[in-house]
Length: 457
Image 1 (cartoon, one colour):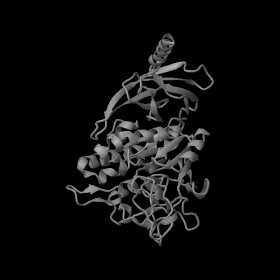
Image 2 (cartoon, helix red, strand yellow):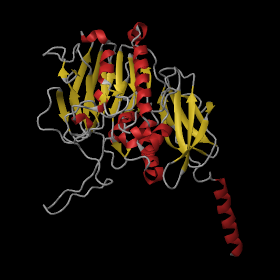
Image 3 (cartoon, helix red, strand yellow):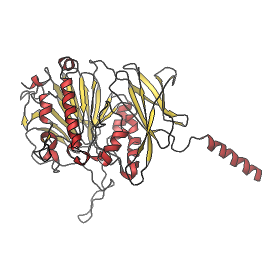
């Protein structure tokens, strides 16, 4: 009997020795478009230091016939524990536009699940489909299940997450960020997951945002631009206006970069190829919520700048107007709001009958209602309302009773936005209500025969 126990023990030990070390298994897989033709970036995390490799192949071909090595960097969370994780990044090149690939990532110490993606079609006539949302929390993210299904059905070419992740990534020494990135893998490992920072990414000079996501360009990790179909998309940080402890110079560097990028996008040959200019950033210039946030004030920092700095910090509304930005996407407010074409608080509809046909000002969309919160129902007047989220700090935002003149449609339903670049003159957007089982509750067809500053004349 003793000999049998020895054999069993030795057998279990041999199996254990064959298993990869704990912490070597890839997790938090997500992909992004680096702005380089025929490329895709695969990013993931391990808790231990391991090799960095992606094995991949064309869909239907010999599985994992191609492989590319990359690099990993150690990321140390800024909390008391100084917890360490390893972030891996591999750039796949020479992909065939519009072709489907299967891949997994990791090393001989452990591999991820098998995922797939479609290399972006880089033609200017490409008509890509997007899912847009902001403010997705880590607990009960209500819109995520529908987005998972629709993404894996192939409904989207790109995801735009317009700030605020996990609530908050740095909490519990970065473990909340780990859990969120694992959760979002079900969409972000299949289509390019393009992001911008929100106010909940503030900790340690936005280090979790800067390091966990792999966005295009050699910038500061907070702003970038890229092209897809007939559009030039600009992602930037509104937070440089609010977290001045990280340096006023950061705000000015972003402003100068935005000016250069928009000037380049407006060169005649570039605007002819990519006539649509679309911006995405977290805190909106306009909103009609009642939460006393920045956009509820007429002197919005993002819109008009700050006069309490030395030197004064310029705002962005005039810059975007001068460069003919067509569509501005925002989040932060936990609601959906579609605006009439607006500049300087004045409505500039194309016409009374067709306000979005050749409008004479940019169109703004706020899509921050993917946020999740679950509250137990109040049963008596004396009972408080308890929340299952952290501190009940994130919930739907209310609206002021009477909407502003520039507010066209408002909804407090949980949901997200779909967008399709139909061609060089038409963009279609619709708002999906998760509260109403996926019903489309609002839609917009934006039509522009002329792009650039001349469109405002």
